[in-house]
Length: 231
Image (cartoon, rainbow, N blue to C red):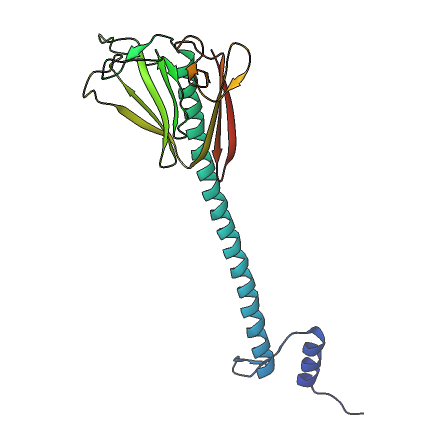
């Protein structure tokens, strides 16, 4: 029976334990015996692990950034839609049936909506703020219309419109796909125009206000919102 040297026993023990064999010579130098195949395999495994970790980290970061961007856009949209509703609700709350005159001196209805899709409605309201208590008419004429996919609110400080009166307008919300409006009359029937028309004759008082106004706003990427304003 062959007697094994101590070095051979160390090699066998190292192989059995699954660790590289390390030989310490007389000069206390350390020599690690790895085969070329083992070193190559370890390098490939390390690269594979790094690639998986890097891909996972990038995918997670990219997903997080997309979610953050989407949430930011949605929060901005909700802020705009809430402000739009507040402004509309305020204008309808202070509705008036007082008629006024245009720049040509013609009497116009206090509340009107024609068949032009981009022209939503023209109303008379007392919603103009006057914190400095300036001398001015308490009522203003407000025009809502759609322009370049934006809901526009326009008004003039002068109640009876004078020539060359400057119009102030503000875009309330953008990316509007479609706006549908209908009005509830005194017979609880919905009308697409106001004042209600029958043939070429307008029915009822020109300054009559609808009992309720329903506004439905469609957005291509945010669905639709339906609001009901009562008088």
